[in-house]
Length: 576
Image 1 (tube, rainbow, N blue to C red):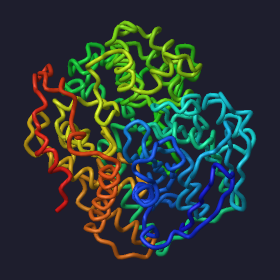
Image 2: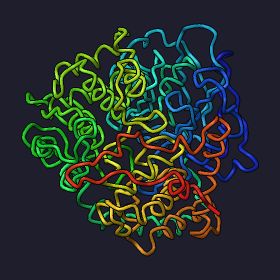
Image 3: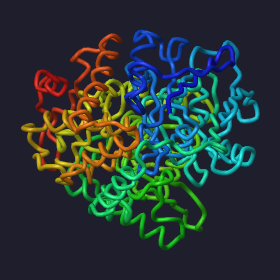
Image 4: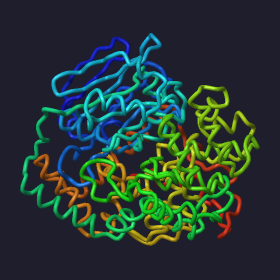
């Protein structure tokens, strides 16, 4: 896998080039961030011709390695103004890898207002008019593309939010059942895809060979241990497959860290009603599916299919972050209402975290009442129709707060905070502040040692030890994202003596290398250095690595405050 496919969106042409030099050994996030640093002017407008949208499979994608089907999408973010990597499951990553494509790079910007459909096959690349798909939601787009090009082709598409270039717009990916339940959600990358005039990309790997592996026997041995590790851990082998990621609702609520009513309290009175246990109960009662993978080869199976009270499909990939943002954060307590909002976000192409926090800001302003599900649903629907208020909501929490005169806006670098209050999970608070991506729990998931006591035990209510744990997890995550592995493998890796070594064994067997665990750490550090360098050139300084002032308020039930200084936070970015 050594070819980069470049598509000039203005000229509607394409070219292939070999990925040589320092690009040859990179994949996933390492590759998207390196290409952005090398090729995109950091001061460019994110929706202008200078920006690029880069899609890159991970180093292990396309192989038999368990949980290796994740994809990195990179660009300068129109939401944060900095570098962005957004990660997704689905089918595209493995299919690109099998076609020998290391990255797809969308360049320049069309002069006309039309949208294109890009179809990538084993022996051709077509850039076609997408007129028949304009204005459609992701559900209908994927349905039509599967009917036309065959079931199980990889599809990535934008909904009306991306077409309007709204900064909360995401890119949705067809899951193995043809639903848009997977997304490169954060950072407004759907708006970048829309600015390139691309409605959807189809990837068909029919006729392609297998990804070459230098040492098949060593790879098989390492993968056997890898699967044992994932299936044997209580989180990846039991908790996530049984209750999905929403297993965290009750856990984080009990820990007093579930942000409720726009980050006013750490406990939601109705948490049980929107919990993973409740979802599992309703799936059993109504039909649906309690567990499935977001891509082929997943052994964790934390995704799901959720039906309405009549047993009809409502949404899939019903995740903890989405349920929190659209539920506890807004005080909406009916799980079906939360599922309707989740479905709308997938169809319109909106990041569920950004949208849920934005709804909280709208409630803060009195635009709609706290907990009013019907009003929230109607408001999200306005994004699809392009109504003025819909455009405001579709541009995210910071923009909406500014438009509505709100001073309580939970963002870092203009990106909405996820589902853990930083005053009660201080390790993840450090990640929110110092990640080059803006507020992002996945960039360094300190919830593991803070709350779940996986990979260590660091007090979540005190600042001691939390800068170091966030820093180490950000390094590890950058490497995991580069390998194309699901972030959730970290639970098993952190608790296994041979966790990192097993990943190294897989990489060595695939590529005929002799890497050590230290090389993996070095890779993670190099990725973060590239990202920090891009942001520095874009104008970011340490003053952007701060939480809003209201996080200095005591946070019940523990009445903790955010007390880390700028100087303490900068230690998370010190790799000397």
